[in-house]
Image: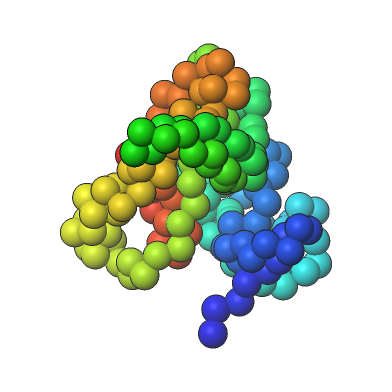
Length: 166
């Protein structure tokens, strides 16, 4: 059975991706396990995989996040969009976005049933298609709220530790 954690507001969150800290150390997995106490609550530390957190922090995308002058996590948004000729209010939460060279990079964490790199290679086009509309909405909301363009969007598959560029 998969463990989950609850955020402060009671929402179920992915246990493999707790609230990311911009100063998460770039260390090998074993020391990262010991240092997690500095960055996570005891409740978070009980259900997360420190090796996955360290791997993400040490990944190219994780290093870019750490170097960013502005990082936003769990950023709520409201936006009006035209849907079938009528205006609709859309609410959501952007998992992670960070500024880089005057533009946003947007990241959405996904838990999937993709179990291997080979399966990911086969299913990546379908995953892009499945989440394309969501990422377009997130992009539009972030650009409207900040006036700054979104240059890149990614899905991060938490169970595999793999990134899909949209």
